[in-house]
Length: 338
Ligand SMILES: [Zn+2]
Image (cartoon, rainbow, N blue to C red; front, top):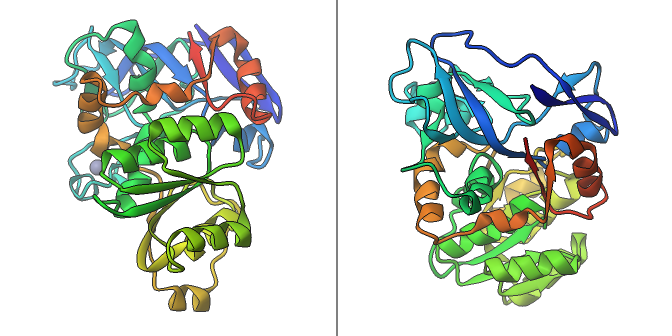
Protein backbone atom coordinates (compact mmCIF):
# COMPACT_ATOMS: atom_id res chain seq x y z
CA UNK A 1 0.00 0.00 0.00
CA UNK A 2 0.99 3.63 -0.35
CA UNK A 3 1.86 5.50 2.85
CA UNK A 4 3.54 8.73 3.96
CA UNK A 5 6.95 8.54 5.65
CA UNK A 6 8.72 11.47 7.30
CA UNK A 7 12.43 11.12 6.50
CA UNK A 8 13.80 14.34 7.93
CA UNK A 9 12.56 17.85 8.65
CA UNK A 10 10.88 19.15 5.50
CA UNK A 11 11.16 15.76 3.77
CA UNK A 12 7.93 13.75 3.71
CA UNK A 13 7.41 11.18 0.95
CA UNK A 14 4.84 8.65 -0.12
CA UNK A 15 6.23 5.22 -0.69
CA UNK A 16 5.24 1.58 -0.89
CA UNK A 17 4.81 0.19 2.65
CA UNK A 18 3.75 -3.20 3.96
CA UNK A 19 -0.01 -3.32 4.46
CA UNK A 20 -0.90 -3.64 8.18
CA UNK A 21 -2.03 -7.00 9.53
CA UNK A 22 -4.01 -8.08 12.56
CA UNK A 23 -1.47 -8.54 15.38
CA UNK A 24 -3.64 -8.68 18.50
CA UNK A 25 -7.07 -10.37 18.52
CA UNK A 26 -8.55 -6.98 19.55
CA UNK A 27 -7.28 -5.20 16.39
CA UNK A 28 -9.15 -4.00 13.33
CA UNK A 29 -7.81 -3.09 9.90
CA UNK A 30 -9.53 -0.22 8.14
CA UNK A 31 -9.36 0.97 4.54
CA UNK A 32 -8.95 4.71 4.76
CA UNK A 33 -11.64 6.88 3.15
CA UNK A 34 -9.71 10.06 3.98
CA UNK A 35 -6.89 11.21 6.21
CA UNK A 36 -5.26 14.59 6.81
CA UNK A 37 -2.32 16.60 8.07
CA UNK A 38 -2.46 17.82 11.68
CA UNK A 39 -0.94 21.01 13.05
CA UNK A 40 0.95 18.74 15.46
CA UNK A 41 2.53 16.86 12.50
CA UNK A 42 4.21 20.17 11.68
CA UNK A 43 6.21 20.06 14.93
CA UNK A 44 8.06 17.05 13.49
CA UNK A 45 8.02 18.37 9.91
CA UNK A 46 9.71 21.56 11.12
CA UNK A 47 12.28 19.58 13.15
CA UNK A 48 11.08 21.06 16.45
CA UNK A 49 10.39 17.48 17.52
CA UNK A 50 13.56 15.57 16.54
CA UNK A 51 13.30 13.18 13.58
CA UNK A 52 15.88 10.43 14.18
CA UNK A 53 14.82 7.90 11.56
CA UNK A 54 12.28 7.61 8.75
CA UNK A 55 8.87 7.05 10.33
CA UNK A 56 5.30 6.63 9.05
CA UNK A 57 3.23 9.67 10.00
CA UNK A 58 -0.40 10.76 10.48
CA UNK A 59 -2.97 10.02 13.18
CA UNK A 60 -6.37 11.20 11.87
CA UNK A 61 -8.51 8.61 10.15
CA UNK A 62 -11.88 7.29 9.12
CA UNK A 63 -12.84 4.50 6.76
CA UNK A 64 -14.33 1.10 6.15
CA UNK A 65 -13.53 -1.86 8.39
CA UNK A 66 -11.90 -4.61 6.30
CA UNK A 67 -10.98 -7.16 8.91
CA UNK A 68 -11.25 -7.64 12.68
CA UNK A 69 -9.42 -9.85 15.16
CA UNK A 70 -11.23 -12.83 16.72
CA UNK A 71 -11.86 -11.01 20.04
CA UNK A 72 -13.60 -8.03 18.42
CA UNK A 73 -17.36 -8.18 19.01
CA UNK A 74 -19.04 -4.83 18.28
CA UNK A 75 -17.07 -3.61 15.24
CA UNK A 76 -17.77 -5.46 12.00
CA UNK A 77 -16.31 -5.54 8.49
CA UNK A 78 -18.15 -3.16 6.15
CA UNK A 79 -18.88 -0.54 8.81
CA UNK A 80 -17.70 3.04 8.38
CA UNK A 81 -15.81 3.96 11.53
CA UNK A 82 -13.99 6.86 13.17
CA UNK A 83 -11.51 6.60 16.01
CA UNK A 84 -9.20 8.75 18.08
CA UNK A 85 -5.42 9.08 17.73
CA UNK A 86 -5.21 7.23 21.05
CA UNK A 87 -6.65 3.73 21.04
CA UNK A 88 -8.45 3.02 24.32
CA UNK A 89 -10.30 0.08 25.86
CA UNK A 90 -13.15 2.38 26.96
CA UNK A 91 -13.63 0.26 30.11
CA UNK A 92 -10.81 1.10 32.56
CA UNK A 93 -11.38 3.67 35.35
CA UNK A 94 -9.82 6.52 33.35
CA UNK A 95 -11.98 5.73 30.32
CA UNK A 96 -15.06 5.47 32.50
CA UNK A 97 -14.24 8.93 33.87
CA UNK A 98 -14.20 10.26 30.29
CA UNK A 99 -10.42 10.46 29.90
CA UNK A 100 -9.86 7.85 27.20
CA UNK A 101 -6.65 9.60 26.11
CA UNK A 102 -5.29 8.56 29.54
CA UNK A 103 -6.59 4.99 29.17
CA UNK A 104 -4.55 2.51 31.21
CA UNK A 105 -4.06 0.57 27.96
CA UNK A 106 -3.78 3.48 25.56
CA UNK A 107 -1.78 3.08 22.38
CA UNK A 108 -0.92 5.85 19.95
CA UNK A 109 -2.38 5.22 16.49
CA UNK A 110 0.28 6.34 14.02
CA UNK A 111 1.00 5.99 10.32
CA UNK A 112 -2.52 7.00 9.30
CA UNK A 113 -1.50 8.93 6.17
CA UNK A 114 -1.79 5.69 4.22
CA UNK A 115 -4.23 3.48 2.37
CA UNK A 116 -4.81 1.15 5.33
CA UNK A 117 -4.43 1.33 9.08
CA UNK A 118 -4.27 -1.06 12.03
CA UNK A 119 -6.36 0.15 14.96
CA UNK A 120 -5.73 -1.56 18.32
CA UNK A 121 -8.53 -2.11 20.88
CA UNK A 122 -11.10 -1.79 18.09
CA UNK A 123 -14.21 -2.25 20.25
CA UNK A 124 -13.18 0.50 22.64
CA UNK A 125 -11.64 2.86 20.10
CA UNK A 126 -13.86 2.87 17.02
CA UNK A 127 -17.36 4.29 16.67
CA UNK A 128 -19.45 3.33 13.62
CA UNK A 129 -21.74 5.74 11.80
CA UNK A 130 -25.43 4.77 11.33
CA UNK A 131 -24.71 3.83 7.68
CA UNK A 132 -21.88 4.23 5.20
CA UNK A 133 -21.93 8.02 4.67
CA UNK A 134 -22.21 9.84 1.37
CA UNK A 135 -18.96 11.35 0.10
CA UNK A 136 -19.86 14.91 1.07
CA UNK A 137 -20.01 13.97 4.78
CA UNK A 138 -16.54 12.43 4.86
CA UNK A 139 -14.48 15.61 5.49
CA UNK A 140 -16.64 16.54 8.49
CA UNK A 141 -16.58 12.99 9.85
CA UNK A 142 -12.80 12.91 9.47
CA UNK A 143 -12.40 16.01 11.66
CA UNK A 144 -14.02 14.09 14.54
CA UNK A 145 -10.93 11.85 14.71
CA UNK A 146 -8.90 14.67 16.25
CA UNK A 147 -9.25 18.33 15.29
CA UNK A 148 -12.97 18.79 15.99
CA UNK A 149 -12.82 16.61 19.10
CA UNK A 150 -9.87 18.67 20.29
CA UNK A 151 -11.63 22.00 19.72
CA UNK A 152 -14.66 20.58 21.53
CA UNK A 153 -12.52 19.47 24.47
CA UNK A 154 -10.95 22.95 24.68
CA UNK A 155 -14.44 24.44 25.03
CA UNK A 156 -15.59 21.71 27.43
CA UNK A 157 -12.46 22.11 29.60
CA UNK A 158 -12.99 25.89 29.68
CA UNK A 159 -16.57 25.35 30.91
CA UNK A 160 -18.24 27.13 28.00
CA UNK A 161 -21.93 27.48 28.78
CA UNK A 162 -24.93 29.40 27.41
CA UNK A 163 -24.53 33.16 27.75
CA UNK A 164 -20.79 33.14 28.41
CA UNK A 165 -18.07 35.20 26.79
CA UNK A 166 -15.36 33.10 25.18
CA UNK A 167 -11.99 34.04 23.71
CA UNK A 168 -10.08 31.70 21.40
CA UNK A 169 -6.29 31.96 21.12
CA UNK A 170 -5.08 30.42 17.86
CA UNK A 171 -6.63 30.51 14.39
CA UNK A 172 -5.47 27.10 13.19
CA UNK A 173 -8.04 24.40 12.50
CA UNK A 174 -8.36 23.53 16.22
CA UNK A 175 -8.97 27.16 17.20
CA UNK A 176 -11.54 27.61 14.44
CA UNK A 177 -13.36 24.47 15.54
CA UNK A 178 -13.10 25.71 19.13
CA UNK A 179 -15.17 28.68 17.91
CA UNK A 180 -17.70 26.28 16.36
CA UNK A 181 -17.81 24.23 19.59
CA UNK A 182 -18.35 27.32 21.76
CA UNK A 183 -21.24 28.34 19.46
CA UNK A 184 -22.80 24.86 19.76
CA UNK A 185 -22.49 25.09 23.55
CA UNK A 186 -24.43 28.36 23.56
CA UNK A 187 -21.74 30.98 24.14
CA UNK A 188 -23.14 34.47 23.63
CA UNK A 189 -19.97 36.23 22.63
CA UNK A 190 -17.03 34.55 20.93
CA UNK A 191 -13.84 36.53 20.37
CA UNK A 192 -11.50 34.93 17.83
CA UNK A 193 -7.88 36.05 17.92
CA UNK A 194 -6.60 36.01 14.35
CA UNK A 195 -4.69 38.21 11.94
CA UNK A 196 -5.42 36.25 8.75
CA UNK A 197 -8.38 37.34 6.68
CA UNK A 198 -9.43 33.93 5.34
CA UNK A 199 -9.30 32.49 8.87
CA UNK A 200 -11.25 35.43 10.31
CA UNK A 201 -13.93 34.79 7.70
CA UNK A 202 -14.24 31.13 8.63
CA UNK A 203 -14.22 32.03 12.34
CA UNK A 204 -17.22 34.32 11.70
CA UNK A 205 -18.97 31.57 9.72
CA UNK A 206 -18.43 29.23 12.69
CA UNK A 207 -19.94 31.78 15.10
CA UNK A 208 -17.29 34.31 16.16
CA UNK A 209 -18.85 37.66 17.09
CA UNK A 210 -15.62 39.66 17.44
CA UNK A 211 -12.12 39.46 15.96
CA UNK A 212 -8.99 40.60 17.76
CA UNK A 213 -5.88 40.91 15.62
CA UNK A 214 -3.43 41.92 18.36
CA UNK A 215 -1.26 39.37 20.14
CA UNK A 216 0.58 39.08 23.46
CA UNK A 217 0.03 41.94 25.94
CA UNK A 218 -1.79 44.01 23.32
CA UNK A 219 -4.12 41.08 22.63
CA UNK A 220 -4.82 40.76 26.34
CA UNK A 221 -5.56 44.49 26.55
CA UNK A 222 -8.05 44.20 23.66
CA UNK A 223 -9.87 41.30 25.36
CA UNK A 224 -10.08 43.38 28.55
CA UNK A 225 -11.45 46.34 26.54
CA UNK A 226 -14.16 44.09 25.15
CA UNK A 227 -15.12 42.65 28.56
CA UNK A 228 -15.49 45.73 30.78
CA UNK A 229 -11.93 45.33 31.98
CA UNK A 230 -12.34 41.88 33.59
CA UNK A 231 -11.49 39.29 30.93
CA UNK A 232 -13.39 36.45 29.28
CA UNK A 233 -15.31 33.76 31.18
CA UNK A 234 -13.68 31.01 29.13
CA UNK A 235 -10.49 31.06 27.05
CA UNK A 236 -9.47 28.32 24.63
CA UNK A 237 -5.70 27.98 24.16
CA UNK A 238 -5.08 26.23 20.83
CA UNK A 239 -1.39 26.89 20.04
CA UNK A 240 1.01 25.63 22.71
CA UNK A 241 3.64 28.37 22.93
CA UNK A 242 4.69 30.43 25.94
CA UNK A 243 3.13 33.54 24.40
CA UNK A 244 -0.20 31.89 23.59
CA UNK A 245 -0.50 30.27 27.02
CA UNK A 246 0.21 33.54 28.85
CA UNK A 247 -2.15 35.36 26.50
CA UNK A 248 -4.86 32.82 27.43
CA UNK A 249 -4.30 32.99 31.19
CA UNK A 250 -4.11 36.80 31.27
CA UNK A 251 -7.26 37.13 29.10
CA UNK A 252 -9.34 35.11 31.58
CA UNK A 253 -11.38 36.80 34.32
CA UNK A 254 -10.80 35.81 37.96
CA UNK A 255 -12.82 32.64 38.46
CA UNK A 256 -12.85 31.92 34.73
CA UNK A 257 -11.36 28.92 32.94
CA UNK A 258 -8.66 28.19 30.39
CA UNK A 259 -9.03 25.05 28.26
CA UNK A 260 -5.62 24.33 26.77
CA UNK A 261 -5.13 21.86 23.93
CA UNK A 262 -2.10 23.20 22.06
CA UNK A 263 0.73 20.71 22.67
CA UNK A 264 3.09 22.76 24.88
CA UNK A 265 6.52 23.46 23.49
CA UNK A 266 8.74 25.22 26.04
CA UNK A 267 5.81 26.52 28.10
CA UNK A 268 6.70 27.37 31.71
CA UNK A 269 4.24 28.85 34.19
CA UNK A 270 5.11 31.17 37.05
CA UNK A 271 3.56 29.83 40.26
CA UNK A 272 3.10 33.23 41.83
CA UNK A 273 1.38 34.73 38.80
CA UNK A 274 -0.86 31.66 38.57
CA UNK A 275 -1.71 31.93 42.29
CA UNK A 276 -2.95 35.50 41.94
CA UNK A 277 -4.67 34.97 38.58
CA UNK A 278 -7.50 32.94 40.15
CA UNK A 279 -8.14 30.98 36.94
CA UNK A 280 -9.04 27.33 36.38
CA UNK A 281 -6.64 25.48 34.08
CA UNK A 282 -7.63 22.25 32.41
CA UNK A 283 -6.39 20.65 29.22
CA UNK A 284 -4.22 17.98 27.70
CA UNK A 285 -4.57 15.50 24.84
CA UNK A 286 -8.28 15.55 24.06
CA UNK A 287 -10.31 12.50 25.08
CA UNK A 288 -11.82 12.51 21.61
CA UNK A 289 -13.49 9.14 22.16
CA UNK A 290 -15.78 10.69 24.82
CA UNK A 291 -17.26 13.10 22.29
CA UNK A 292 -17.45 10.85 19.20
CA UNK A 293 -21.06 9.58 19.50
CA UNK A 294 -22.46 13.07 20.09
CA UNK A 295 -20.34 14.72 17.39
CA UNK A 296 -21.20 12.01 14.84
CA UNK A 297 -24.90 12.77 15.49
CA UNK A 298 -24.34 16.50 14.99
CA UNK A 299 -22.56 15.95 11.66
CA UNK A 300 -25.07 13.30 10.55
CA UNK A 301 -27.99 15.65 11.30
CA UNK A 302 -26.31 18.54 9.46
CA UNK A 303 -26.04 20.70 12.61
CA UNK A 304 -22.31 21.24 12.14
CA UNK A 305 -20.01 21.21 9.14
CA UNK A 306 -16.50 21.17 10.63
CA UNK A 307 -15.11 19.81 7.34
CA UNK A 308 -14.99 23.44 6.15
CA UNK A 309 -11.54 23.70 7.76
CA UNK A 310 -10.16 21.68 4.85
CA UNK A 311 -9.24 24.30 2.26
CA UNK A 312 -6.90 21.98 0.37
CA UNK A 313 -7.66 18.44 -0.83
CA UNK A 314 -4.93 16.37 -2.46
CA UNK A 315 -4.34 12.78 -3.44
CA UNK A 316 -2.17 11.02 -0.84
CA UNK A 317 0.67 10.87 -3.39
CA UNK A 318 0.98 14.68 -3.14
CA UNK A 319 1.43 14.63 0.63
CA UNK A 320 4.63 16.73 0.40
CA UNK A 321 2.68 19.65 -1.06
CA UNK A 322 0.05 19.19 1.66
CA UNK A 323 2.67 19.70 4.37
CA UNK A 324 4.35 22.60 2.54
CA UNK A 325 1.06 24.45 2.16
CA UNK A 326 0.28 24.14 5.86
CA UNK A 327 3.85 24.95 6.92
CA UNK A 328 3.70 28.17 4.87
CA UNK A 329 0.18 28.86 6.17
CA UNK A 330 -1.19 28.85 2.61
CA UNK A 331 -3.65 26.17 3.77
CA UNK A 332 -5.53 25.87 7.05
CA UNK A 333 -5.71 22.08 6.80
CA UNK A 334 -4.99 19.53 4.11
CA UNK A 335 -7.26 16.55 3.43
CA UNK A 336 -5.59 13.56 1.76
CA UNK A 337 -7.43 11.02 -0.38
CA UNK A 338 -5.66 7.65 -0.44
ZN1 LIG B 1 -9.17 2.64 29.34
